[in-house]
Length: 122
Image 1 (cartoon, rainbow, N blue to C red):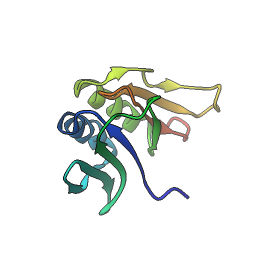
Image 2 (cartoon, helix red, strand yellow; image 1 turned 90 degrees about the vertical axis):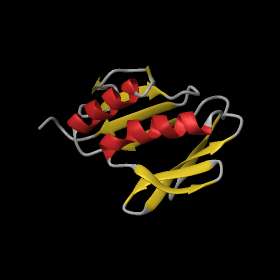
Image 3 (cartoon, helix red, strand yellow; image 1 turned 180 degrees about the vertical axis):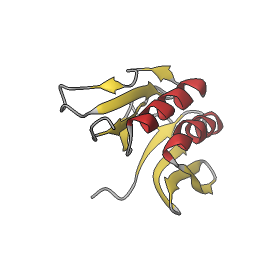
Image 4 (spheres, rainbow, N blue to C red; image 1 turned 120 degrees about the horizontal axis):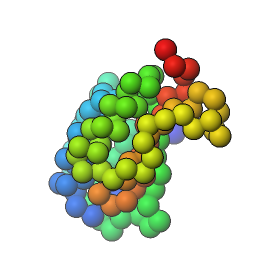
């Protein structure tokens, strides 16, 4: 089981603002902050970190599991509104499995962030 993961970002404040907005629909918020690093999560557990530095190359892909397709849609809309770039609008990716519903957005450094729901449509 993965306890936490992180990415390196080129502009900490810009990325923190992006992730604060993009992750709000999945109930993630900044839980802990130290100079040049912020941990996002829920229930007082930071499990996704951004750290100031030279961004990972190649960029990272990270998927956040959510409990409804509506949350995937809300994540995508919030991430695009926060300046993310479309890398796959919300939809079924049947080549993964019949209920794989995901959306992909590139963050300010080109990291591919995804929200995914594995449940059938309600």
